[in-house]
Length: 408
Image (cartoon, rainbow, N blue to C red; front, side, top):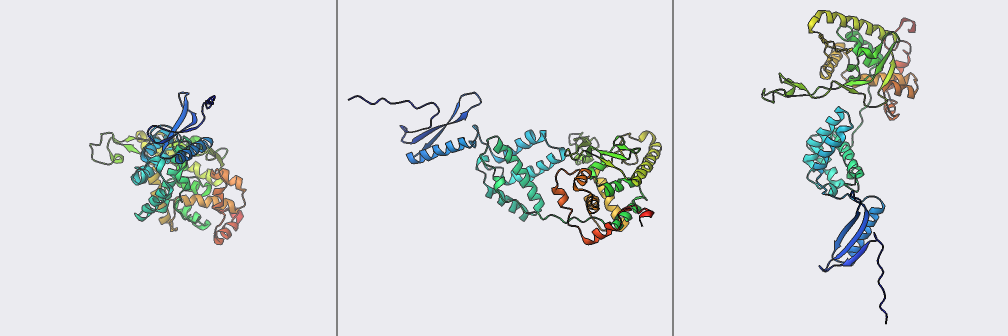
């Protein structure tokens, strides 16, 4: 009787066999390694049925391109540190990177950093967010941690370090969106009247009439302003200063108060999106204010003499130094108090300008261009304003802020 000849399986075919060790083994080719050789994975189970199931799962992962990359998996903390310093740092703005670092080092690594990256579950994240809020963090802080983690793990998934992103499955902390509360026309006029009694009057007029962000206003240089044509270019934002010790820490003070402190970030950065880089037309009243402001700055330059720093910024202190965002914030709070206007965020001035434009019927696309929005979702936040504000604005179309006589 002739013995049946065994046929050899084609290269790359999955196999299941019982080994001399008594276990069942499976082999599956899932792709090609960096060195060009076949990436053939091995599984080992106690029973043949379990080995077959493990092989089938590897085949499904291969076919759906979700096979985990080779190499040591590492912990969540190790991946987050690598991601923020070597991946995110190369592509995001300074302020965004600073927010990532705070979320990672203050909340994420202490909370879930010890977990193996490929074993992190959505439930781990939901428990972390709940614990953060119980311990006093705001829902907004917990949500920022969630967004940071989702972005970092999304990159890990894209690179094959994990097969799914648990942050995309976890329920994010709920954040109640604050109501947009624009200032009324009367409040705007009181603010501008009070501001006219001090320095940098035009700084507040730009915020309330044009809706520029704080960093955009403080980042303006005279080369961005054309008073002849009445246009203003927004192309950068001023960053909050950050310092490191110039003395090696021997002074015993915080880095910002070190006598030999060294700036640790640039003064300005480009606007955060292409939509943020924009040209804006200036009302005649604002052109006049800026001309007056430039004359006042020239007088301060003469007074300061050799102490003047010719920084080129539109808004400076008495010696030509660009305004610090924190100092600017306190000036805003003092202005509100002096004008007898309800307290509000500096960003509410931007809300005011946006709301005015939409109520006046300016097309949404045009408002997006003026405000530097990249999506229509932002405009939707300003659609539900109070009837009092709507009536107030509608009755003052021509002289909305400065109240021209022919509009009364």
